[in-house]
Amino acid sequence: MKSTGIIRRMDELGRVVIPIEIRNQFNIVEKDPIEIYVDGSSIVLKKFEPNCIFCGNTKDLLTYNDKLICTNCSKKIGALKQDK
Image (cartoon, rainbow, N blue to C red; front, side):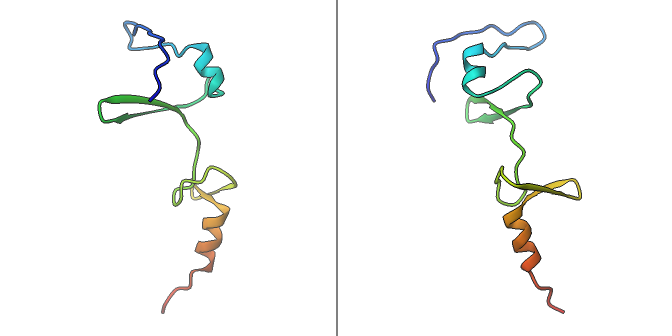
């Protein structure tokens, strides 16, 4: 992980402002969803990108039963044959 040298204080509601330079670098704009997860002893913030529930691809997504599936996985599922 690369240190930016930027330090911000958390406010009384637990909020931290992400500096504009970092938001610009990652193309984060107002109202964008941010994913929060823990990696060891680190808290990681990542711009949320919808992805395929099977392979994690973020391109060419289709919605099926409120789930996202990429076209490649959709083709693979369509090619499956049921054994009877």
